[in-house]
Image 1: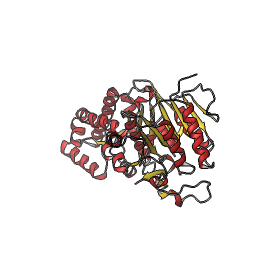
Image 2: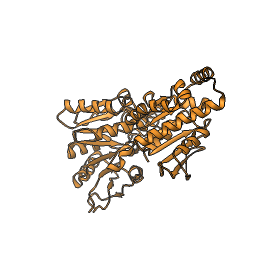
Image 3: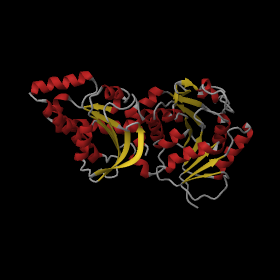
Image 4: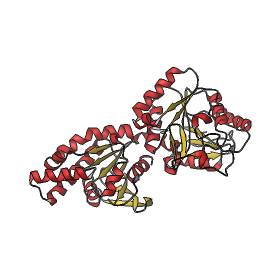
Length: 412
């Protein structure tokens, strides 16, 4: 029998499959079982209790039976992202049986429009109860805290401001909560992006406490189960396009994750501009899970580049060459400091410059498009061989396309 890395408890088969797939896609052997006592030969065991519409006492007993039957470093209670089912009873069963120090509860699944803001579960921006009409076992409240009112343990919250500040802020909040309670405590966490879920998962993983998890497939996709997952966060976006669409997409990037090259250094001393950007980019990767470097983040910044070019007596061709040099040199320095697991580029000339710097010989097309005209590829040859690459024309995409692409390749 294989030693398990994680046990996931789901209340229906579709949830069991979509959550288990989050682990299987990262190389963990994952089985979905219906008998909690069946022998296991896998890394991740997903048990489907089929209790979504069961009486509360039956749901409680089923979850408690699964927890008692298996021991694994990670215990995950899969919840429906619209909070249907016996949420409070099943979480109580997990807390009673496993007695973790903290149960990190993040039901958001941003990729499917499910987010949590101020403790309220939303579907495409609306409170969940306003969106569900004909489902069985509907939640009693859109507020996750209100939904847990019958749970006989403390319930704390972590709002967007903390999660948005990154994993260190999350870790500090979790540590504070842990110190204030001497019994299992539920922490309801906001999340509006996969970056938020990664910050939550990474912070919890580094905490000196016994942590259990509850959430949808979103949080499951952010959890690290082994050292092979430790390269998450080595994701870089490179934006050389100066289209209005790119500028709009850059506004969705968290402030701390966006690094804009200094215009004067970029045009006069491109290598120096790249060297100056390295530290902030590595810091952003640690905090946010990804970083984005750009030559200009707004029309005003483009004007500043043109004024600097005029002052230096540079023509348009020289300006393009020096911007390309600064961006490609930045990518090289980042990759040498922390080998990239994912790369995003926008703008054709920028992409070619970066691939040339990385000595890439070809790209493998995966057949996957993250949105219309935004393909997922894999670099072949050179020091970044096997690295995932998403390329986007400057004028393509929605306002969140850049962030969504970075989130996607950060969890592969």
